[in-house]
Image (cartoon, rainbow, N blue to C red; front, side):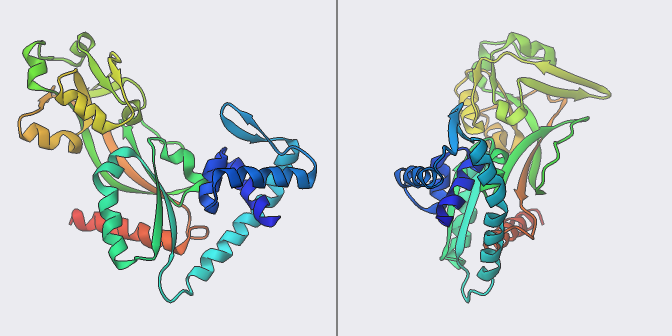
Length: 300
């Protein structure tokens, strides 16, 4: 029954039977059966579905609050015992923004797995990585910052993996049939490609000398993946506001043209978030150190 109670804790933390089932390496149907058996054992309903998420009833909240510390304590003990293994083993749950997953993460895992074949990974690719902090070991998330920006406080350790400015781009074929914008305000007359997961909204930030311009551009096409945004710009759908590293090679080969070069933009920052050493697993900590060391070597 204790394993089912621990399973219930993760159902409430994630709001999902399927997410908790993945963590316990059981099927969703088995997870649903565990939950039903737990409710039958206690003779009361422990959770209800609300807005597609499972939320605790009053009885369930009591179980969650009382048993959560025991689950966390058991996991800390398990992680400490991992240090005594003669060969590194373990599992790492990573939740990652699409741009890093598509361009870097699998290459890093491939390198690491050659030296650590008994370490397994589960990768959840989503723009909202920090929403999964309670059920993941490592979170890789991006944000756009500008003068006056302040990130919300998180109970996580944060290390920057990379940063670059945004750049405004369009394809040559698009510009053949549209006027070249000379001021950010001209963008209001153009179809714009939006990824609110990159910028937080359809506000594009520009700066020239002491003047900050926050421009709300038209939402012609909205996606949640920078690679889709890039593809739309290459196909001539409209103007895009992309992290420079995503667009640079296409600018260099002439498939995209950089616009408004006299204006500074927001800074795109990619960050690694992880739990404190007191609660992090040794396996996840070693892979985290590998990512940070690799980042430093790339920039040395």
